[in-house]
Image (cartoon, rainbow, N blue to C red; front, side, top):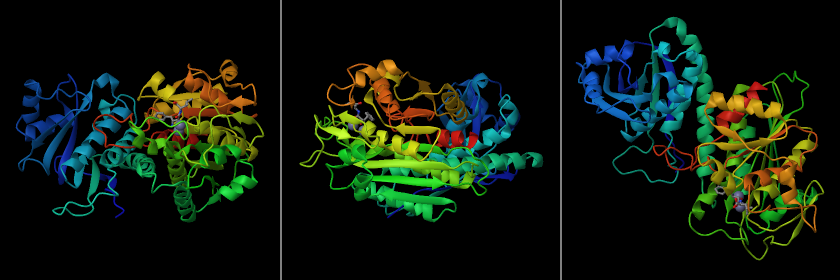
Length: 506
Ligand code: BES
Ligand code: ZN
Ligand code: ZN
């Protein structure tokens, strides 16, 4: 029953006009005369591309396509024109998105091979290596479908696959292209892995099942260790925040701690901690959410899924620093054993929190995980979480909120974000916002006022950070709803490329 679309991406010395494939991907810039490769393809097709453009049936706008048939004039059966937008805006993210659309179209056409060629000179000062990486990431992203639980249609083979080949005529370029593709392949696969974990429903992906998944990853990877704190160990460690949130569910909570250590433990630098919120289902608890769209709250584990996938990518990329992947996992449900508004919870740090809304559960898990990471000696600490609806109101579905206590760290994350195309936007979370989180009967309360909910949530978290540099990504808007209209439904695995690139850059 476990199924996915097997995707592979390779680079080969070949002429794109001759290479055999079901589809040849040809990128077209807006308002540019045809030249280079596109012009050669156009000549073979007896001017079909120029005619399309003349008639304005296709203009090269981003996220648009046109399909042509080569009828023996090319090695490929079909030509898929994909709009690249204006040439002056050409960057790796444009190629990534175009490759994704091409791969997605190929999957919809139910074909299994796609060839592509890129005129590197069209892409300003971006190197073939970084472009090839983006291409590979895009192919993986676009070919992804969440089909684990779909019965095959009787007329089709049960598992489909897509092989993408980047044709490169110049031998000297093959090495850098292959290097870029190797990284793109690792990141693309990791991102799709996060999507699958996030897409799995809450009846399947319980906290214990997520922990088993992490243990499976650790077992098959050298240099990995996985420790799982079950409800008994959580109680022994006094992880009051995680326990409170998990109390209402028959699926008990877990704290998953993955540790990667580099082959040669050369650096004496403190370990990096990546923390991901994993609420396997967020009903809101006693402060129950409205039923509209509630099924989407299975995606409240997207941060945890991303961290798990980043660790899988790091296993292949082998950075030189110790990295902890810390995933607090729980299910937030209303029942006779749930935590309630009015409860006072003693967290792992010793700080007490007055619960005013059981739906503000993410911060209750994260505060324990952050304090735990700091106790392990981690610095910096970066968390990613579908934390607040307020962040969706503030930034919509295109950018994640970025907050933290150290401008150098935030800049490093922004730099990684520019490379990977997973966009972020800074929001404040300084002491002014902490005021809103002070309780009269405990050290803190778990909700602020009506305003700046993303900032007050982050300010709450900041209270559990000691000396470490810390950054927080609020991905509530970008995990699923950030998907372009043409993306496959479900999780987009936000943050996997970003956090992996950041971790490797340290
Ligand atoms: N998981 C939600 C945040 C969320 C909202 C994620 C929309 C994705 C889409 C979080 O646990 C939550 O419910 N937050 C509350 C906090 C409030 C009660 C202070 C919210 O944002 O409404
Ligand atoms: Zn909630
Ligand atoms: Zn939540």
